[in-house]
Image 1 (cartoon, rainbow, N blue to C red):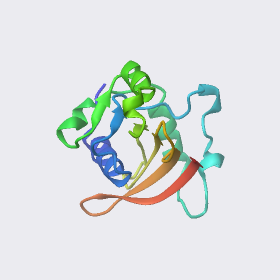
Image 2 (cartoon, one colour):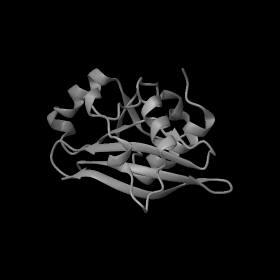
Image 3 (cartoon, rainbow, N blue to C red):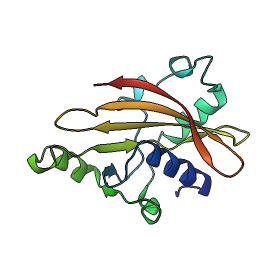
Image 4 (cartoon, helix red, strand yellow):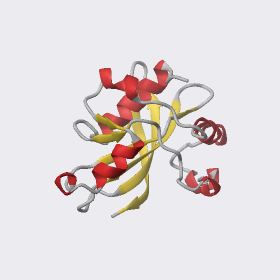
Length: 155
């Protein structure tokens, strides 16, 4: 399975927004939660200001039941994609202590194709930034833009 053109556009917008350039990124899309029994429900992510529909949430959850390679994005953005094994081993290396390690889920896309939802995590072994955020993106005439963010945790 490969990323669609729309998914690639959304991911590149999100990766630029959170400043992933020149950082380490897991080479496959991340799961929504490490424990599949603790998937964020629509009620966990809904707010009057976010406009996350149940359909958008469902699409996001469904697309993230399995992972997908993000390697095709290398042509568009300068990041260091790492396998899961290298990602874990680099994280504990002393010379990488001030590096930032990112994961990103596949985006869920609304049925009208105008909104997208995804989750980004950033972790630095030596301290901040350490966070997880939901990003809601909106399609303008030509581009995707981050419309709102919702912090899940921040240290």
